[in-house]
Length: 266
Image 1 (cartoon, rainbow, N blue to C red):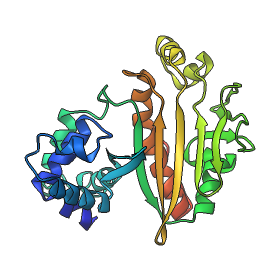
Image 2: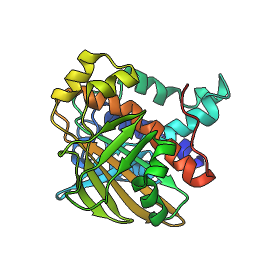
Image 3: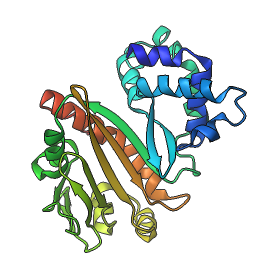
Image 4: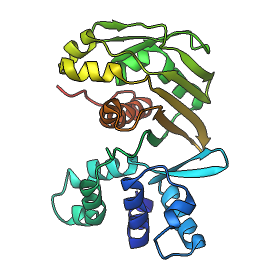
């Protein structure tokens, strides 16, 4: 956490986070534009942000794209802002103001990227992502499949079974990478969660998205990067999953590190 505070102490690095918050997934060239800093300086600042886990990177062809990673910010909020009302919160004033001014739901972004570091093994993390007994505990949903490319994935959540031939495994490298298409939106699913039927119908009308889990050893930890993409511009589904994923992944991390998931909201 000290690395996060040190990274946030520099106004230029806060400006970079502001720019990623306004439009996620930018290259070094795009971030340099209009900053009045040398490319080498921007690169060094990004390296500090990445080391503090405030920025995640993904390669798209030959281009390295940078994404704001909310995990450390959420951790700071839980440890400091929720416990202390003034002095500790003031240390993050610039960043929180920027986040409130330019919400993460910016319609120019068509994907969700989140990175977290978990004290576990790649094999154990794979098990947590693919075994219904695990997913039920931290997610509240049981995902059933043989996890072979092309196989279907069946969801069971709050007594509602969601099965569809288009819910399939896209990639499966145990302990390394998993990707599958997102579940179907049905009125039964919406009713059990109390969603407005008109909203559920809107979700169902969108093209099907996909989610990818990249698993990498990181010293004694495991780096998990979740990319949820293939959304159309202005996607209402994207708006929903932006709020859901951080809680799910925080509960996954807690379960693997402590044996118990986070309490689910009443």
